[in-house]
Image (cartoon, rainbow, N blue to C red):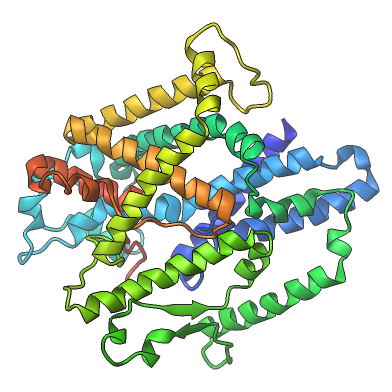
Length: 457
């Protein structure tokens, strides 16, 4: 109980730190990675404080299990308050109004197809609403923030977010034993927090650890100060290779920077060499495809909402589908036991799981159905609503989770939307104007669409 209470306090702290750093200061992003710097920093000082407390009175010190509970709570809070949800959700609800003008006529094209409970402004109003102007340009001195206008849409979208995260939790409970005990994935990103809380190891007394900590800490501190005060020198960690390929067909290579990531160097020591080779090989293969496409004079275009080349984006989509099929095939004996436990009297030992298999399976089914129903109520075509939710949760999210669990990737993004798969068999115009309008909100919130939410200077 005390770990949950402390976790809530640290969740509030993390949300404040991340929101202030990314939305107010804007120079740094410390909450959006799979291993958020804000969480690691706060957790580090929490562990130090706990060890000091243990020396004074061991009875009041937190156990490793309690520390990891707090860490997981901060991890989820950081991702939700950063680019995971909040930095996409809030601007998506107001941007369509602020950027409407006489040239694009969005107020005529889109507003009539938006349900009033989805947005903080009236869809019947033409042109920019005062709430949109105040959101982007700031309120006048003495004016109150229009919380009442935001309350209904934020509550409505919170229902969808809750259903999606419930589905994630249920999926995690179903997949845990297969990935951890049967396939024995390495989960590299868990190594650092586990080293922090392990009582029997001298991790914090290791000189090499502090040497490895000091080098990137010095460089990132210097570069951070340079962003705030440009007169301070910096150490560049990013180099653009495209500047060296200026002649055809090599100038067709997509944006290719080399970034010296100290975190990646550390975590990649924990990965099998075969996996590291695969990461390098397929990255270079995508760049080679750019060269070959230019040699044959192919028209090089990108995915609709991503900078990825069109032919590579659809290769990625196909790979996602094949990977999920392979995951199901490899885990078929486990999944049979799970679903037998949920639907029959044939029970399986699930005492080690966060949720019982019956709860996880039914929780997943109910959350998927309700999420589909929410999208339908918002105006999305029922069949495509089911397709959108199932692809996002059961394909995209599963493959991203697997790449983090097995590959230790600090940042995962896909290169396609469910709509891109739909367009392989039908035109998106067949969905109708209302479905496409609602889908634009879902893409902005669940996909990679970046909408500026910072105040204009």
